[in-house]
Image (cartoon, rainbow, N blue to C red):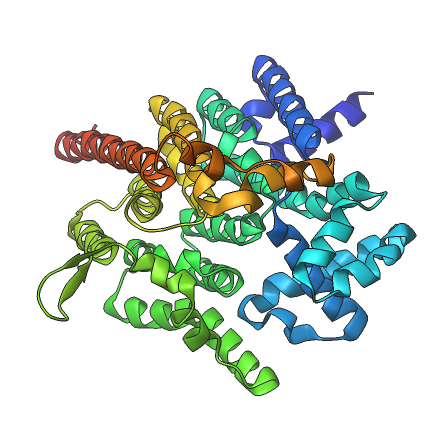
Length: 441
């Protein structure tokens, strides 16, 4: 019995953290938060989804059934991950083969209707989302190794904040998007950076960039943080861009298509430059890019580039992006782990994430039926198809565009306030570190 207990304790130290595992009270709270968070996830998993989930698995089905590996050349690795998962799932669960015609149907409306009215809709939604649950749990266990060594209470706080985070739960289990995969790889890169495995950290982040473009926003400050010599900047920049360059080369050779130029010309890149100041004639300033440049320069200027500052700067970058640019709801997920790092010491930031989510829920209206009433279509597709959407209802009383943009403006204000709180947090810690350096204490 003693050996069994010691074995599970060792496992707990590896996957949870020794700080929590070696403290009985903390371990009990960990289990409560874990079971409560899992319950909430499985409560939502079978019932809600946004049309993009079906599109993701339609591309995976095209790869599995038709051998079309390039069905999503812009997100090649993500498609391969979903394809392998889909192949394994349909091997274990033969009923999934009955969805072949639905998934291969090129008519997006008919395939969606056939999907939501299918007999096994709740089961198939659970299967489709379960891979996100795996990466969700993987993320939090990396976070436990990443944050607040030696402090069980702060680790527990961050764990609780992740397990009951409204943004995490919504993006993965209601909206059902796959950003968690790229985020997991990004967190692994930061775990390596914490251990000063600088080249490996940048290489893993390069893989994250190849999976999802968003980590490229934090690549510069990771390189600045890790670089010890001038040559490090050149080597790590080359490594950091290697993932994107490799995907570009594979796509061009295999499919005759450019990933980089297709992304630059896609509406998703336009989101980054959507907010701008018009000057004169053709002259304009892209607001986020200007703010981003200031942020990078301020990080360069820092004398003591601690890991804590690195994490908080990443949070600022992603918060500034959603505050100053057009974005899709799932993009907000990228800010969560970095904000929670600061929230471990400044808990009001976590509550502001709830405020963000409340106002974001109103901004959802902007995207129309797909992200509002159609999220519930699996319950009764006919009812929710013919149910009046929120925009016509609001239009009876007020201009829907003005209504949504009022809440969008408040959301931006809250996000910028969170940036300011992180700035104050950094300022306090910088002064503390300078005092320690001067006094030697």
